Length: 290
Image: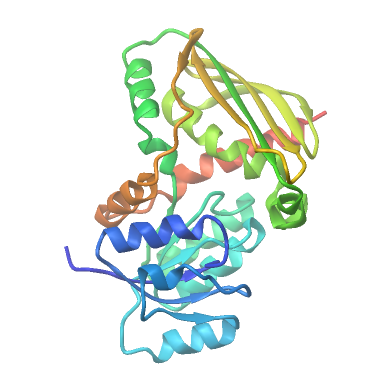
């Protein structure tokens, strides 16, 4: 497979490092990045990568570059994904974007139209689908046609700085159900089938809880983000129970993004439609929230 050239928007954020790692591990090139905040670690991966704090200078550089950029990677705040996807498509690049790929159906329809117009692929990062425990869970679910009982819990503690970023701004992040829940709702839809019904028990800035009725499971979900003092050590409680049996899901794996990248580079088609299912679910949940 020919090695690809990448550009990236959002290089100063936490998740960007996972993309640097994946691009480097697959022996591809990162040509240029854009972020208002400079990244101190890019040079550890790509010594020749150009960093820009101006989106205009970033795009002008890519337009004039002798190296064809195959993929634009988007790690910007959720509310900017739509804008940056359109930018990449108009510059004749395929897209790799962090979840949620867009925020609403209008944006989805627009980028799907542009994807066809420019004949470019749009792929969302769905890295948790490559987690070993999740793959085992999918195999278990595929072997049964009965209605399964799932308990999904994700409680995480964050330092005050987190809530001062775009992630703590519901307008920019989409709130806890979209910013955090979309990762897990994607897994539930992928493993247990389409949504039949739903109930939101409560939904606020820090906590959300509800029930999903899917084709092959009743999913009780519970999300929480708690602010803690800087001197404390953040705790994460991440649990998935399958018919009352806990699925080990506490460990994280640095190479999940790499596995996701490897599949994306092999795909002839986009995963755009599949990735939008969880976003549509979130929009439905918000409408039904108490």
